[in-house]
Amino acid sequence: MQTIREFMQSDHKRLDDLFEMFQERKDTDQGEARRNFCPFRRGLFTHITWEEEILFPIFEERTGMKDNGPTFVMRAEHREIRDLLNRIREKIKAGDFATEKMDGALDVLLRSHNDKEENVLYPWIDKVAENAKDQKKIFDAIREMTPHNTCGCSH
Image (cartoon, rainbow, N blue to C red):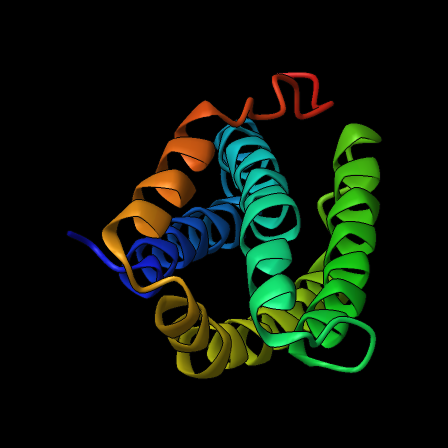
């Protein structure tokens, strides 16, 4: 069975690719850039929801670390990520694709954030939820989670 780390790392890669396509196209094909940003934003919001509603509670319950552990830090970073995503979306909705500073800030934040998750938090979650029943429960919950159906972009 696939580990949580492998699954979530694969989703990070998918999201990174969408963000990269947005950045590559925004100066030459704004319609295509918008079509890449919307699933990136929606996908990242869904990914964060999987973590905050499924993975983090299991980790916190099994380790007793909530208010001062790694999930506390990850939640704070998630707030920053959401804020940047929403600010970029608002500029795009207004037809302003000059988002380089925010793109750069988001890129730096995501690289650091993903590194901590992939190399520390996800392996730790795999360890505390190592039996097949736990893993199945987690993946079933992820599959059942309803993604955000709208990105708020006009495309």
